[in-house]
Image 1: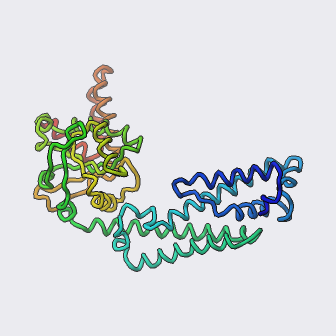
Image 2: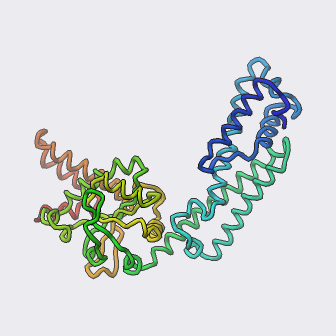
Length: 361
């Protein structure tokens, strides 16, 4: 209302920025708290009197740039606060969405109740700002910030609790329903693979998606590493591989998964899109928050239990490829022995074990 009553270049510029903020969220994240609120808050912050036109505030010599910057910072702060609030108030909250619809069971009743109180405080703080005017709106900003910070702390606790509870489910129980398929390198399937074929092997759970540029960059590197870590016998016969990759898709639909697997040329195992609930359970169990992610597991020979060898297989693979590259170039530099030994010591223990096994063969 404040800016709308002044037909000045300054107010038109501000209104343009407000409209832009309203448009950004095709995704629904960056919705403004309301043009009226932003206008009143900005006017109160920049002017001695809320009734002073913004044009007059910006017309004082040497003060225009400072006030313009303050206005922009206020708008950015509000948009950022709204984005964080939306992530908290979503159902499930964004931080817990990978645990699926059963996230409340994994978090537990007591912590869920505390978390709901924190989320309610954020919602009430937003409403209080919307209902305030002038300096009253600014007085509520600290309350909103405190509510958001507390809710985010609770979400971090909830996520850690959910991940711990998810990991209590036995591997046999978790994987028994999986219908894995082996890719043929062209996006098609070579047939279904049972969980029993994973017994006694090192299994890499590869969380990835075709819409993710870092994933598309990492996938061929992972393929090179896996081929190198498998024995020559295993390369000819997948059943004898030392290492198995299970691709767990975060693609939005089955078509996206099929397109990605066809373009990547992968010949490893994949969890079909129809089993996305299991994909969410695995992501929750190993607390996967972003992709690409690679979780390295050692499956017992009878398949009854497993050991997590690395939660950061992504970096382990990159270090291994760098080691292979340096080892290949070392003879040309006359550093073969020393460089190879030093590089091998820098590898992750699970990679060292596989490299030693190949060397013994």
